[in-house]
Figure 1 (spheres, helix red, strand yellow):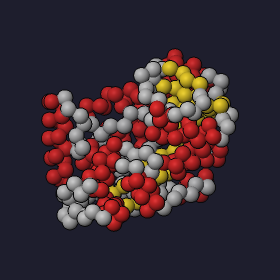
Figure 2 (cartoon, helix red, strand yellow):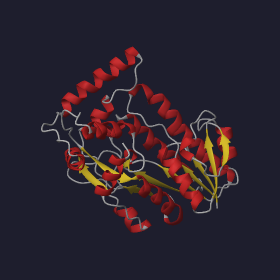
Figure 3 (cartoon, one colour):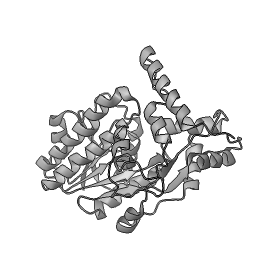
Length: 320
């Protein structure tokens, strides 16, 4: 099958490209001229040069493809990156949808996020039917991923065959920056306190498998949550301590204190031009919630079967 992958040099995209190549697909990638291609290794592929925000190269890359995996996105929990996320996540997805419609693409698999589902109620995990409400809109990344999905559903209303997959926090063979910092600190006994809240974790290899299953079995116009373990941060950090032999923090920092740290950290970073702080206001907003999501639909309809969290955590710690 002729397949295009956007965001191919990123964590999920590169893993997906390598898997598609091993399955014998004819893979094309869309990436910027300046993108670091090392994660792709020697995987044979055709390259289209361009940015998601540029409609012409996106349309050219989509032309003649049988399937498109739209993985490309900007992930940030820093408020100053709001415009950048809107350009890449929302307008970029609009360009991909238009390119698929114009290019006769048979199926689009859109890499969304549990962020686009919204913030669950405290009493139970959220499924794909949760309404996206005001608390989630205040978090820039959540908002732009939800808006990106609306671009996909707009395309579906015009005849596009598209599905979305919504992974939780991705660990395993590759992990996100903030999660990496947190686990590294815990593994090195440099985390002074537990943090509140909880997350839904999924292994990178299971995310790739979810994409492939969505391509073959997903129902047009549907979204599928990909989440394996729903855990409090305190549970994750104690499990980390058990593996590494380091003591787990004995106290928990209140969410209100994290809010203050996030505001001050962003202000100082913006003033000095430094890198993004480990705690931002939006990260603090996330830690105030148990971000638990139910993947029953993906298990039932796609036949998706993720590995246990304990295996994913161990693999993650080995790669820190």
